[in-house]
Length: 432
Image (cartoon, rainbow, N blue to C red; front, side, top):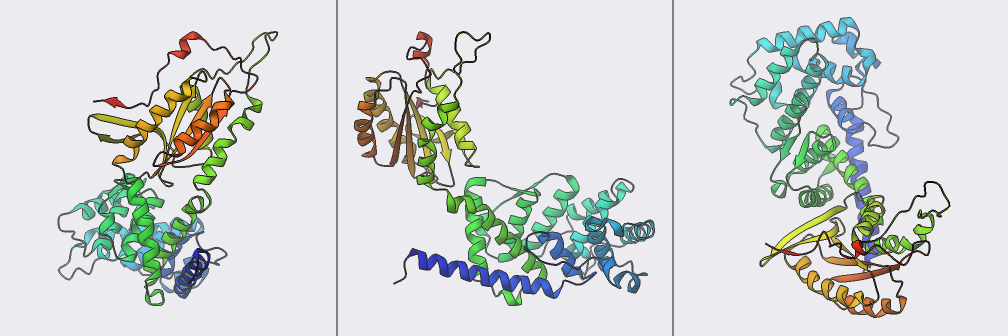
């Protein structure tokens, strides 16, 4: 029976094998002026390490051989070319492109046989880019294409076409589309296109935390179960880009874990070495007070946000009965809530234990997003003799997986302003 390490290694090899197959498909279209290759370049530029691109229409004989063409495929090639290879945009080519767009505007975009560039993703994206290169000088091109894409006559044949339509409209309007029904997407190209739209800011998810995880899982599943050798080049490029993005964004998840979080929090005391509490003799002494739970939360935010991209401040949780709950911080990708407490004196530890035990039930009761709680306690009184007992008590509470207790640094005075003692916790449970 294989252990986790062997299974992870086999999965890595399988992913690498599939990515190599996708790269081979892209390589077949990597020739000057190749429409498939240009779309792949548009989607993948920079995503395949060390890949030597050779799709510039001006690099070979494509421009000379197609000098008189003004049909949609030729216009799409010029749209990709001018967008990505600015040297191609000489006055003669720009005039040719605009003449072709003028002619295309005169044609019926919805013929009975549906043989229109609107239904061919390679052509639609290329012509959309061509229109965008002329948007400042000939804005009617942009209006024409937007009208066509939003016309009731335009009925995408499948979800892939629908996503490409949304992507094109988002480019033209400079406003991202809402990507819905992620949980029902099964086709690799649908999943990959949705992920590409998110990466290019032409699409947003309704529920970024939940939908993003579902999308990532389904993309990897789709890669592992795809016949990559038979995928059309545009689909291969989109899937490669999606998997590459997922793997890149998952690096933190692979490295960062609850144990890493605990190590970061336990460095709190060592990090206080540079905390400012100037001497009285200075003309303008700077003194950073830590006199309440709020200041502790502020410090924790700086620490957590420098490490975790997805940290949520004051994470609101589902109601339990008549009570609403807000944890101090949430790390959705790790499924961890962080609760901060401030002990003014040694006797406060008993009350902190009670509060945390009560809150822990409400925090994890009705959420599938969070599974663990890490408790962080700042001890102003430096009552180190109480730390172990409190830690043991809280570690026995279901859902609490770590308790980190730190003490006030020596440069801060033991006495704190009376007003600070009455400061209330900003993220406590409150009846509604």
